[in-house]
Length: 335
Image (cartoon, rainbow, N blue to C red; front, side):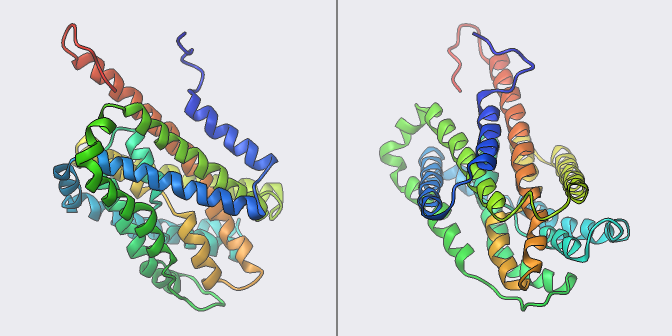
């Protein structure tokens, strides 16, 4: 039975359910540690399957798409910080110094890796290019974020660089992807013949990340750290920032890139990494200020996951319709 057009699909319902469940029953303690390992396994499996699915020619083309990678880096480390600085005259009347420092800190963070690539896959974008762009953004972010934060934000702590982000990217993203490429000669045909499996792992990994990330935010006091009015202002600022970056990356992508690369720029250039941001924030900001500083990041992170899930689904539906239109008469279309 066909779902009515006004109802969200199962993927969106699963994301909403994950947020509600995390709000009511956030996972913590030893269970959170086990859950984190399970999520890591799911992410590694996702990139292993993508490695097995993609041809070496496609991977090479994604890695050498320097114009696209440069645009992603400019959006992440230039446009975001400039917008944050430009907002100071207006937001200084509405946000405390700690919250505005948190907004600037959000603006200098690298892009997400797992969700950016998963959303690109769901939207039928250029997955090899997304792997390269998101990974490069995070690798550079290990050094660029403390540097930019030191230049733009006055902190009580000292800047430092953690190698955890580099290790995570290698173990969770690059190593499984390379392993999938090696295994492609044996399982590539089977993976290609089961696209629903890759789609299920894509969407499941996103739901797992949403529940884990939102659980951590709730436990950190997402709903208790601010009065309702201040929280509303902060949410409004996060929505405006995300909407502006989505519009800018979409406009540039639509003007200068093919559809598959447009999707990469949209998802990799408009998002910020909670996984990288929290550890770096613990080094850069002292004591009691930490909670207020990371609150804008926690709110922005949840908003970007929801918005990008909706956008990815719309891209996927449009791609499915285009596939049906271009199918020859009597053909058997495949996802």
